[in-house]
Amino acid sequence: MKTIVITPARYASTRFPGKPLAKLGGREIILRVMDRIAEAGYPGVVATDDERIFTTVKDAGYLAVMTRSDHQSGTDRVCEALDRIESLTGEKYDVVINVQGDEPFIDPEQIHDLEQCFEDASTDIATLGRVYPATSTYAGLADPNLVKLVKSPSGRALYFSRSVIPYLRGVKEQEWPRCHKFFTHIGIYGYRSDTLREISALPKSPLETEESLEQLRWLENGYNIKVAESEKENIGIDTPEDLANAEMIMQKSFGEKGKIS
Picture 1 (cartoon, helix red, strand yellow):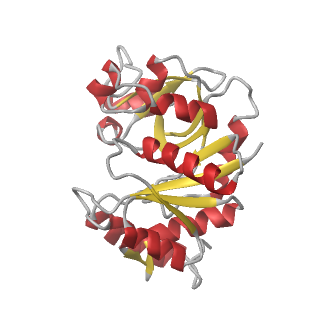
Picture 2 (picture 1 turned 135 degrees about the vertical axis):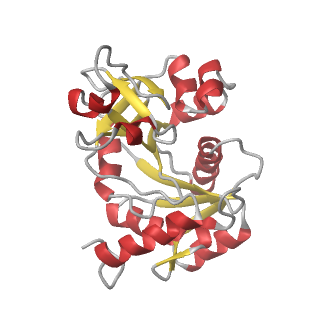
Picture 3 (picture 1 turned 60 degrees about the vertical axis):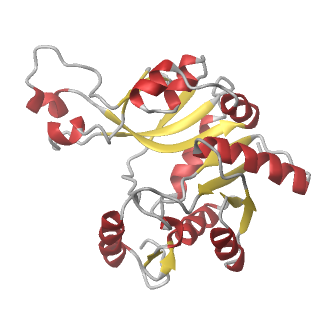
């Protein structure tokens, strides 16, 4: 099974323009992400529509490809990048891992976990879920920015939602985290190459539109999404405030060379 990791990164962002080139611990966020992918031992490529990001990545010794600027999602950008990479290199990949360009703390083991999902021939798409801590609050669980999921005993995703699922009838909401194992979604994906091309051609679905969750389009169209459990809590960077928090985490968790100690 031949696997490649593609990281979509664009300069324009409503909440944080230029985010991929903002520095975390003295190094650009996008390069922090690429460092983690390299540590995992996979070929990694940045897919971007911005020359500044392209140049920064190339100057650091990593691979990058330019893509169109009109993509509606990172998945579509990853799909275009895959076609370009395979055309340029003549290589063919079985599995594509999509690691977002604002995930500088991604654990290399999480990438391995995604790839292993494809050892099951029925897996079309793979993603990660984390058990919500039983000691945490219901208010935190109910945050619509924290996507929840339910899965079958075999690990197949049944639904994703911004609402708390499942609903616990007859239980006070404050007690929910202690009474049930809730799963939250970690937004990292793997796809079989053919599946990636298929889902990129699909129109938006009703559930996707209602919840603003792209993965619901894939479920509505019958794709099997395998969920691997991860104990790691990923820390994405969406705003300048998130970056400030990440700087504090860097000071506590990273060694002098920028690797997690």
